Length: 111
Image (cartoon, rainbow, N blue to C red):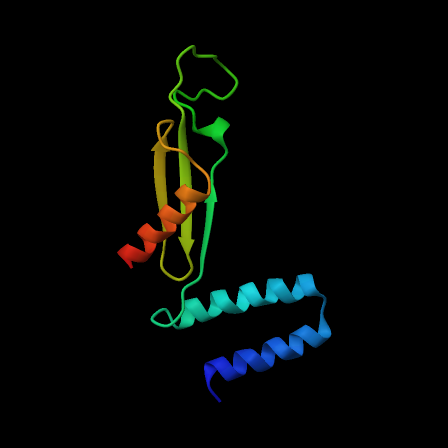
């Protein structure tokens, strides 16, 4: 039985036994496993940005307030079974979905 057929059977069985939320979680876990076991055929990634307050330079937590701060943003992309890529931008580059898509494309290009 092929990997795809086995996965399909597991998903159909799981869908009948558990709730939709649990089914989605199981689907993510199975896709992540496929990406780790067959990296030439499958890819699974997660992308997220870091909280803005923790990215200001200089950073002294709550100890000192600085009049001039350098605001930056970190966008991370985790490629299951491969690596973590971190992209740093400053306030002159907009964040949001455009940055997330750009970072994912960079990971695809470097693969």
